[in-house]
Image 1 (cartoon, rainbow, N blue to C red):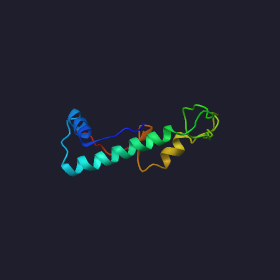
Image 2: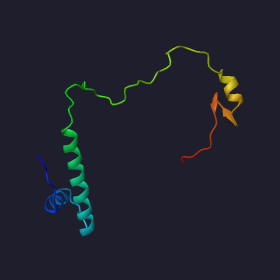
Image 3: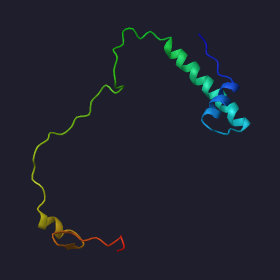
Image 4: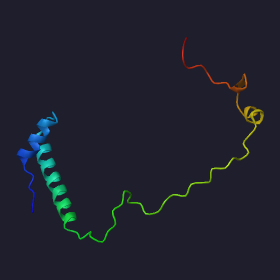
Length: 98
């Protein structure tokens, strides 16, 4: 089965989407949509009867590090590396006016 996309269909879709297309845009979209439909039809002809359904196309899974409690920097050590600190935290310039 071959589905054809023609200029009238593209104009109708553009109207539904409230798009104003120039003539050259309509022609280009007609060609591109026709090519997309042709490609999907070509994919539909493939025999996928032996292919397991999957929700992911990536077969390898990323390894995540273990969820383990580890030592972190001490507050005083961290604040000592900051340009400025105040009240036990980082001091940053004011960026919101009162």
